[in-house]
Image 1 (tube, helix red, strand yellow):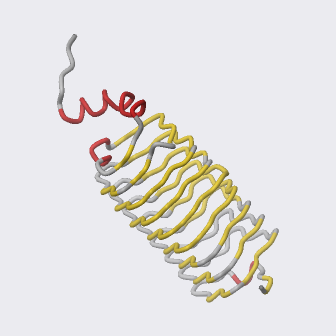
Image 2: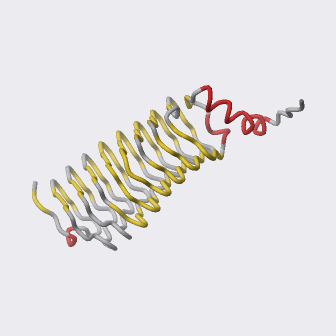
Image 3: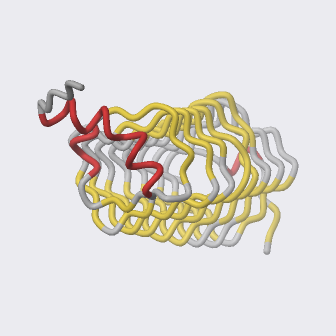
Length: 201
């Protein structure tokens, strides 16, 4: 695998088999770039622009950023480990067979996205925004999720039993998700409000 450098990240770049290690990649514009079989390890991605990028068979480990833009991007067979990201803006994107393990993301924005086979494990999530998204085979394992938004989402075969949820918005979009009995009890007031049920002891 060849070593990459910051100047490889540019609009419409074709990046094949490159390893980016310990680099300052801040503010680089990689709009519409294609990453194929690449690795990013211990890199600073602050302000990196990945609008419309394609990230394929690629792994990220220990990367960090206060803000990372990736709307309308494509992620396939990608792994992300021990991320430290403030706002990961990836609305209207496509995520297929993606695994995120460890680390912290304050805001993961997947609004209006298409998600197929996403696994979140041991991740601390501030906000997970799935509003208006189509999500199939999402698995959440041992994750703290401060706020989950499923407004107008379409879920199928999604396992949320490993999510420690604090705030839920868009409860009507939860159809197709699997939860524990304890989670269901916590959701009961929201479900009652959603269907207009009046609970009067």
